[in-house]
Image 1 (cartoon, rainbow, N blue to C red):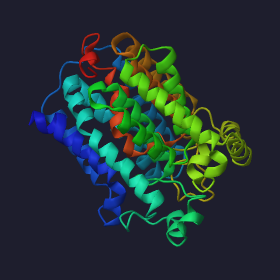
Image 2: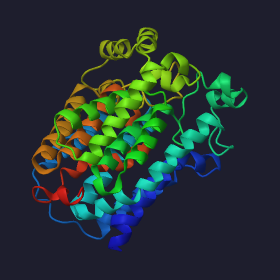
Image 3: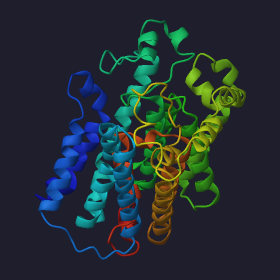
Image 4: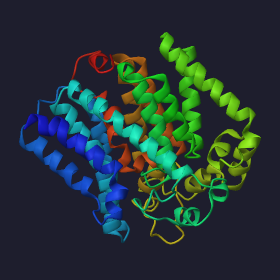
Length: 395
Protein backbone atom coordinates (compact mmCIF):
# COMPACT_ATOMS: atom_id res chain seq x y z
CA UNK A 1 0.00 0.00 0.00
CA UNK A 2 2.86 2.42 0.82
CA UNK A 3 4.44 2.06 -2.64
CA UNK A 4 1.06 2.58 -4.25
CA UNK A 5 0.50 5.86 -2.40
CA UNK A 6 4.03 7.30 -2.33
CA UNK A 7 5.04 6.47 -5.91
CA UNK A 8 2.57 4.80 -8.26
CA UNK A 9 -0.39 7.14 -7.74
CA UNK A 10 1.56 10.45 -7.98
CA UNK A 11 3.53 9.05 -10.92
CA UNK A 12 0.26 8.06 -12.63
CA UNK A 13 -1.24 11.50 -11.90
CA UNK A 14 1.77 13.12 -13.60
CA UNK A 15 1.26 10.95 -16.70
CA UNK A 16 -2.47 11.66 -16.76
CA UNK A 17 -2.03 15.45 -16.62
CA UNK A 18 0.66 15.32 -19.32
CA UNK A 19 -1.51 13.21 -21.63
CA UNK A 20 -4.80 14.84 -20.60
CA UNK A 21 -5.34 16.54 -23.97
CA UNK A 22 -4.79 13.30 -25.88
CA UNK A 23 -7.15 11.46 -23.53
CA UNK A 24 -9.72 14.25 -23.80
CA UNK A 25 -9.51 14.08 -27.57
CA UNK A 26 -10.46 10.41 -27.25
CA UNK A 27 -13.36 11.18 -24.93
CA UNK A 28 -11.64 10.43 -21.59
CA UNK A 29 -11.71 13.69 -19.64
CA UNK A 30 -10.20 14.70 -16.30
CA UNK A 31 -9.13 11.20 -15.25
CA UNK A 32 -6.30 12.78 -13.25
CA UNK A 33 -8.86 14.39 -10.91
CA UNK A 34 -10.14 10.95 -9.88
CA UNK A 35 -6.65 9.77 -8.97
CA UNK A 36 -5.80 12.96 -7.06
CA UNK A 37 -8.90 12.35 -4.92
CA UNK A 38 -8.05 8.65 -4.56
CA UNK A 39 -4.52 9.61 -3.49
CA UNK A 40 -5.74 12.09 -0.87
CA UNK A 41 -8.31 9.69 0.57
CA UNK A 42 -5.81 6.82 0.56
CA UNK A 43 -3.18 8.83 2.42
CA UNK A 44 -5.69 10.03 5.00
CA UNK A 45 -7.17 6.58 5.61
CA UNK A 46 -3.78 4.91 6.11
CA UNK A 47 -2.76 7.30 8.89
CA UNK A 48 -0.71 10.48 9.15
CA UNK A 49 2.42 11.37 11.05
CA UNK A 50 2.10 13.90 13.84
CA UNK A 51 2.57 17.40 12.45
CA UNK A 52 5.62 18.78 14.24
CA UNK A 53 6.55 21.49 11.74
CA UNK A 54 5.22 24.88 12.85
CA UNK A 55 5.94 26.33 9.40
CA UNK A 56 2.93 24.49 8.02
CA UNK A 57 0.80 27.31 9.46
CA UNK A 58 1.79 29.49 6.48
CA UNK A 59 0.18 27.06 4.06
CA UNK A 60 -2.83 26.48 6.30
CA UNK A 61 -3.48 30.24 6.49
CA UNK A 62 -3.57 30.32 2.70
CA UNK A 63 -5.94 27.33 2.54
CA UNK A 64 -8.28 28.61 5.28
CA UNK A 65 -8.28 32.12 3.83
CA UNK A 66 -9.31 30.79 0.43
CA UNK A 67 -12.13 28.73 1.92
CA UNK A 68 -13.33 31.71 3.99
CA UNK A 69 -13.40 33.94 0.88
CA UNK A 70 -15.27 31.23 -1.02
CA UNK A 71 -17.96 31.16 1.69
CA UNK A 72 -18.35 34.95 1.58
CA UNK A 73 -18.49 34.99 -2.22
CA UNK A 74 -21.07 32.20 -2.13
CA UNK A 75 -23.54 34.65 -0.56
CA UNK A 76 -22.39 37.80 -2.39
CA UNK A 77 -22.08 36.46 -5.97
CA UNK A 78 -24.59 34.27 -7.73
CA UNK A 79 -22.32 31.62 -9.24
CA UNK A 80 -21.64 28.86 -6.73
CA UNK A 81 -20.76 26.20 -9.33
CA UNK A 82 -18.03 28.28 -10.97
CA UNK A 83 -16.64 29.29 -7.57
CA UNK A 84 -16.54 25.68 -6.36
CA UNK A 85 -14.77 24.56 -9.52
CA UNK A 86 -12.21 27.35 -9.18
CA UNK A 87 -11.63 26.62 -5.47
CA UNK A 88 -11.01 22.98 -6.37
CA UNK A 89 -8.45 24.01 -9.01
CA UNK A 90 -6.62 26.36 -6.64
CA UNK A 91 -6.37 24.08 -3.61
CA UNK A 92 -6.59 20.39 -4.52
CA UNK A 93 -3.04 19.88 -5.80
CA UNK A 94 -1.37 21.91 -2.98
CA UNK A 95 -3.46 19.98 -0.41
CA UNK A 96 -2.36 16.71 -2.02
CA UNK A 97 1.33 17.58 -1.57
CA UNK A 98 0.93 18.91 1.97
CA UNK A 99 -0.55 15.55 2.98
CA UNK A 100 2.10 13.68 0.95
CA UNK A 101 5.08 15.36 2.63
CA UNK A 102 3.53 14.97 6.04
CA UNK A 103 3.23 11.22 5.43
CA UNK A 104 6.21 10.19 3.27
CA UNK A 105 9.95 10.82 3.17
CA UNK A 106 11.73 12.97 0.62
CA UNK A 107 13.41 9.92 -0.94
CA UNK A 108 9.97 8.85 -2.15
CA UNK A 109 9.64 12.15 -4.00
CA UNK A 110 13.13 11.71 -5.46
CA UNK A 111 12.08 8.52 -7.20
CA UNK A 112 9.17 10.31 -8.90
CA UNK A 113 11.41 13.16 -10.08
CA UNK A 114 13.84 10.71 -11.66
CA UNK A 115 11.21 8.52 -13.32
CA UNK A 116 9.45 11.41 -15.08
CA UNK A 117 12.60 12.59 -16.92
CA UNK A 118 12.05 10.39 -20.03
CA UNK A 119 8.50 11.75 -20.32
CA UNK A 120 9.85 15.32 -20.40
CA UNK A 121 11.97 14.37 -23.41
CA UNK A 122 8.92 12.80 -25.04
CA UNK A 123 6.90 16.00 -24.57
CA UNK A 124 9.79 17.96 -26.13
CA UNK A 125 9.92 15.53 -29.07
CA UNK A 126 6.23 16.08 -29.73
CA UNK A 127 6.96 19.83 -30.00
CA UNK A 128 9.51 19.29 -32.77
CA UNK A 129 7.09 16.99 -34.62
CA UNK A 130 4.25 19.49 -34.20
CA UNK A 131 6.22 22.52 -35.36
CA UNK A 132 8.05 21.00 -38.34
CA UNK A 133 5.83 18.14 -39.52
CA UNK A 134 2.28 17.96 -38.16
CA UNK A 135 0.57 20.81 -36.25
CA UNK A 136 -2.23 18.47 -35.12
CA UNK A 137 0.25 15.70 -34.17
CA UNK A 138 -1.47 13.36 -36.60
CA UNK A 139 -4.87 14.02 -35.00
CA UNK A 140 -3.71 13.05 -31.49
CA UNK A 141 -4.64 16.34 -29.82
CA UNK A 142 -7.62 18.68 -29.61
CA UNK A 143 -7.94 20.84 -32.72
CA UNK A 144 -7.88 24.54 -31.83
CA UNK A 145 -8.36 27.39 -34.31
CA UNK A 146 -4.58 27.92 -34.54
CA UNK A 147 -3.92 24.22 -35.14
CA UNK A 148 -6.72 24.00 -37.71
CA UNK A 149 -5.29 26.97 -39.59
CA UNK A 150 -1.73 25.61 -39.45
CA UNK A 151 -2.84 22.15 -40.58
CA UNK A 152 -4.45 23.70 -43.65
CA UNK A 153 -1.40 25.78 -44.55
CA UNK A 154 1.99 24.88 -45.96
CA UNK A 155 5.01 24.84 -43.63
CA UNK A 156 6.54 28.07 -44.95
CA UNK A 157 3.31 29.89 -44.14
CA UNK A 158 2.32 28.54 -40.74
CA UNK A 159 5.85 28.42 -39.27
CA UNK A 160 6.05 32.21 -39.43
CA UNK A 161 3.28 32.50 -36.82
CA UNK A 162 2.73 29.09 -35.24
CA UNK A 163 3.85 28.33 -31.67
CA UNK A 164 4.35 24.77 -30.51
CA UNK A 165 2.32 23.53 -27.56
CA UNK A 166 3.29 19.85 -27.89
CA UNK A 167 0.59 17.84 -26.08
CA UNK A 168 0.10 20.43 -23.31
CA UNK A 169 -2.81 22.46 -24.78
CA UNK A 170 -1.10 25.87 -24.97
CA UNK A 171 2.33 27.34 -25.91
CA UNK A 172 2.44 29.22 -22.61
CA UNK A 173 1.96 26.05 -20.56
CA UNK A 174 4.44 24.12 -22.71
CA UNK A 175 7.11 26.85 -22.57
CA UNK A 176 6.93 27.14 -18.78
CA UNK A 177 6.86 23.36 -18.39
CA UNK A 178 10.07 23.07 -20.42
CA UNK A 179 11.82 25.87 -18.50
CA UNK A 180 11.07 24.36 -15.09
CA UNK A 181 11.82 20.83 -16.30
CA UNK A 182 15.24 21.87 -17.61
CA UNK A 183 16.13 23.43 -14.25
CA UNK A 184 14.88 20.34 -12.43
CA UNK A 185 16.86 17.95 -14.66
CA UNK A 186 20.07 19.99 -14.29
CA UNK A 187 19.53 19.84 -10.53
CA UNK A 188 19.42 16.03 -10.75
CA UNK A 189 23.04 16.05 -11.83
CA UNK A 190 23.49 12.33 -12.47
CA UNK A 191 20.55 12.32 -14.87
CA UNK A 192 21.42 15.26 -17.13
CA UNK A 193 23.73 15.65 -20.11
CA UNK A 194 24.69 18.49 -22.44
CA UNK A 195 22.98 17.16 -25.56
CA UNK A 196 19.75 16.39 -23.75
CA UNK A 197 19.58 19.84 -22.15
CA UNK A 198 20.20 21.61 -25.46
CA UNK A 199 17.50 19.43 -27.07
CA UNK A 200 15.06 20.57 -24.39
CA UNK A 201 16.10 24.23 -24.64
CA UNK A 202 15.31 24.44 -28.35
CA UNK A 203 12.06 22.58 -27.89
CA UNK A 204 11.13 25.26 -25.35
CA UNK A 205 12.06 28.02 -27.81
CA UNK A 206 9.56 26.59 -30.30
CA UNK A 207 6.82 27.58 -27.86
CA UNK A 208 7.47 31.22 -28.71
CA UNK A 209 7.11 31.87 -24.99
CA UNK A 210 9.03 34.92 -23.79
CA UNK A 211 8.85 33.78 -20.17
CA UNK A 212 10.71 30.59 -21.15
CA UNK A 213 13.55 32.69 -22.57
CA UNK A 214 13.65 35.05 -19.56
CA UNK A 215 13.65 32.21 -17.00
CA UNK A 216 16.44 30.40 -18.87
CA UNK A 217 18.59 33.51 -19.12
CA UNK A 218 18.12 34.32 -15.43
CA UNK A 219 18.90 30.74 -14.48
CA UNK A 220 22.08 30.62 -16.59
CA UNK A 221 23.28 33.92 -15.14
CA UNK A 222 22.60 32.66 -11.63
CA UNK A 223 24.50 29.42 -12.21
CA UNK A 224 27.46 31.14 -13.87
CA UNK A 225 27.96 34.08 -11.50
CA UNK A 226 26.57 32.91 -8.14
CA UNK A 227 26.78 29.12 -7.92
CA UNK A 228 30.01 27.22 -8.38
CA UNK A 229 29.45 24.77 -11.21
CA UNK A 230 31.32 21.72 -12.47
CA UNK A 231 33.06 21.53 -15.82
CA UNK A 232 30.25 19.52 -17.46
CA UNK A 233 27.57 22.03 -16.52
CA UNK A 234 29.79 24.99 -17.35
CA UNK A 235 30.06 23.48 -20.84
CA UNK A 236 26.27 23.22 -21.05
CA UNK A 237 25.88 26.91 -20.24
CA UNK A 238 28.69 28.05 -22.55
CA UNK A 239 27.47 26.01 -25.53
CA UNK A 240 23.85 27.06 -24.95
CA UNK A 241 24.91 30.70 -24.65
CA UNK A 242 26.90 30.52 -27.88
CA UNK A 243 23.94 28.96 -29.70
CA UNK A 244 21.66 31.73 -28.37
CA UNK A 245 24.13 34.33 -29.68
CA UNK A 246 24.31 32.67 -33.09
CA UNK A 247 20.52 32.44 -33.33
CA UNK A 248 20.15 36.08 -32.30
CA UNK A 249 22.78 37.17 -34.83
CA UNK A 250 20.92 35.41 -37.63
CA UNK A 251 17.42 36.11 -36.35
CA UNK A 252 16.71 38.20 -39.42
CA UNK A 253 17.31 35.13 -41.55
CA UNK A 254 15.15 32.95 -39.30
CA UNK A 255 11.91 34.80 -39.91
CA UNK A 256 10.29 31.56 -41.09
CA UNK A 257 10.74 30.11 -37.60
CA UNK A 258 8.42 32.66 -36.04
CA UNK A 259 8.36 31.06 -32.59
CA UNK A 260 12.10 31.54 -32.08
CA UNK A 261 12.04 35.00 -33.63
CA UNK A 262 9.27 35.94 -31.21
CA UNK A 263 11.44 35.40 -28.13
CA UNK A 264 14.86 36.61 -29.33
CA UNK A 265 13.97 39.59 -31.51
CA UNK A 266 13.99 42.55 -29.11
CA UNK A 267 12.17 44.79 -31.59
CA UNK A 268 9.44 42.22 -32.02
CA UNK A 269 9.15 41.76 -28.25
CA UNK A 270 8.80 45.54 -27.85
CA UNK A 271 6.02 45.65 -30.46
CA UNK A 272 4.19 42.78 -28.79
CA UNK A 273 4.35 44.49 -25.42
CA UNK A 274 3.10 47.70 -26.98
CA UNK A 275 0.14 46.00 -28.67
CA UNK A 276 -0.69 43.51 -25.90
CA UNK A 277 0.84 44.99 -22.77
CA UNK A 278 0.94 42.80 -19.67
CA UNK A 279 1.43 45.90 -17.54
CA UNK A 280 -1.79 47.38 -18.91
CA UNK A 281 -3.65 44.17 -17.99
CA UNK A 282 -2.18 44.22 -14.48
CA UNK A 283 -3.13 47.87 -14.04
CA UNK A 284 -6.67 47.20 -15.29
CA UNK A 285 -7.10 44.30 -12.86
CA UNK A 286 -5.75 46.39 -9.99
CA UNK A 287 -8.07 49.32 -10.72
CA UNK A 288 -11.11 47.05 -11.06
CA UNK A 289 -10.29 44.83 -8.10
CA UNK A 290 -12.49 44.50 -5.02
CA UNK A 291 -9.69 44.28 -2.47
CA UNK A 292 -11.61 42.72 0.44
CA UNK A 293 -13.51 39.84 -1.15
CA UNK A 294 -12.24 39.85 -4.73
CA UNK A 295 -14.28 39.80 -7.92
CA UNK A 296 -15.30 36.15 -7.65
CA UNK A 297 -13.45 32.85 -8.01
CA UNK A 298 -13.30 31.80 -11.65
CA UNK A 299 -13.73 35.25 -13.17
CA UNK A 300 -10.24 35.05 -14.68
CA UNK A 301 -10.09 31.28 -15.22
CA UNK A 302 -13.47 30.44 -16.75
CA UNK A 303 -13.09 30.92 -20.50
CA UNK A 304 -16.85 30.66 -20.98
CA UNK A 305 -17.36 34.07 -19.37
CA UNK A 306 -18.47 36.78 -21.77
CA UNK A 307 -15.55 39.03 -22.83
CA UNK A 308 -13.11 36.64 -21.12
CA UNK A 309 -9.59 38.01 -20.77
CA UNK A 310 -6.74 36.04 -19.20
CA UNK A 311 -4.86 37.49 -16.25
CA UNK A 312 -1.37 36.78 -17.69
CA UNK A 313 -0.21 36.34 -14.09
CA UNK A 314 -1.13 33.59 -11.64
CA UNK A 315 -0.45 35.80 -8.63
CA UNK A 316 -2.43 38.81 -9.90
CA UNK A 317 -5.18 36.40 -10.92
CA UNK A 318 -5.46 35.34 -7.28
CA UNK A 319 -5.58 38.98 -6.20
CA UNK A 320 -8.34 39.79 -8.69
CA UNK A 321 -10.48 36.73 -7.95
CA UNK A 322 -9.95 36.32 -4.20
CA UNK A 323 -8.85 39.73 -2.94
CA UNK A 324 -5.71 41.24 -1.43
CA UNK A 325 -5.70 39.21 1.80
CA UNK A 326 -5.42 35.91 -0.10
CA UNK A 327 -2.88 37.58 -2.38
CA UNK A 328 -0.76 38.43 0.69
CA UNK A 329 -1.21 34.95 2.22
CA UNK A 330 0.01 33.44 -1.03
CA UNK A 331 3.07 35.71 -1.11
CA UNK A 332 3.91 34.67 2.45
CA UNK A 333 3.55 31.01 1.47
CA UNK A 334 5.94 31.48 -1.49
CA UNK A 335 8.44 33.55 0.50
CA UNK A 336 8.51 31.01 3.34
CA UNK A 337 9.00 28.18 0.85
CA UNK A 338 12.02 30.00 -0.60
CA UNK A 339 13.34 30.88 2.86
CA UNK A 340 13.09 27.28 4.07
CA UNK A 341 14.79 26.13 0.87
CA UNK A 342 17.65 28.54 1.57
CA UNK A 343 18.16 26.99 4.99
CA UNK A 344 17.66 23.35 4.08
CA UNK A 345 18.36 22.77 0.42
CA UNK A 346 21.02 22.96 -2.25
CA UNK A 347 21.15 26.16 -4.34
CA UNK A 348 19.71 24.24 -7.32
CA UNK A 349 16.41 23.71 -5.52
CA UNK A 350 16.32 27.24 -4.20
CA UNK A 351 16.60 28.63 -7.72
CA UNK A 352 13.92 26.19 -8.91
CA UNK A 353 11.54 27.47 -6.25
CA UNK A 354 12.48 31.05 -7.21
CA UNK A 355 11.83 30.25 -10.89
CA UNK A 356 8.40 28.79 -10.10
CA UNK A 357 7.53 31.85 -8.01
CA UNK A 358 8.82 34.24 -10.70
CA UNK A 359 6.80 32.44 -13.37
CA UNK A 360 3.65 33.03 -11.33
CA UNK A 361 4.19 36.78 -11.70
CA UNK A 362 4.64 36.87 -15.48
CA UNK A 363 2.29 34.06 -16.65
CA UNK A 364 -0.86 32.37 -15.38
CA UNK A 365 0.14 28.89 -16.58
CA UNK A 366 0.78 27.50 -13.07
CA UNK A 367 -2.97 27.09 -12.77
CA UNK A 368 -2.70 24.18 -15.21
CA UNK A 369 -2.63 20.66 -13.70
CA UNK A 370 0.42 20.02 -15.91
CA UNK A 371 2.46 21.58 -13.09
CA UNK A 372 1.34 18.97 -10.57
CA UNK A 373 4.94 17.86 -9.90
CA UNK A 374 6.24 21.43 -9.48
CA UNK A 375 3.70 22.17 -6.77
CA UNK A 376 5.35 19.23 -5.05
CA UNK A 377 8.73 20.95 -5.35
CA UNK A 378 7.29 24.16 -3.88
CA UNK A 379 5.75 22.42 -0.90
CA UNK A 380 8.65 20.01 -0.30
CA UNK A 381 10.49 22.66 1.71
CA UNK A 382 7.71 22.45 4.31
CA UNK A 383 8.50 18.79 4.96
CA UNK A 384 8.97 17.50 8.50
CA UNK A 385 12.46 16.27 7.62
CA UNK A 386 15.55 17.70 9.30
CA UNK A 387 17.81 20.35 7.77
CA UNK A 388 19.56 19.40 4.52
CA UNK A 389 17.03 16.62 3.96
CA UNK A 390 16.82 17.32 0.22
CA UNK A 391 20.53 17.07 -0.40
CA UNK A 392 20.09 13.34 -0.80
CA UNK A 393 17.51 13.95 -3.49
CA UNK A 394 19.80 15.91 -5.77
CA UNK A 395 23.07 14.06 -5.46
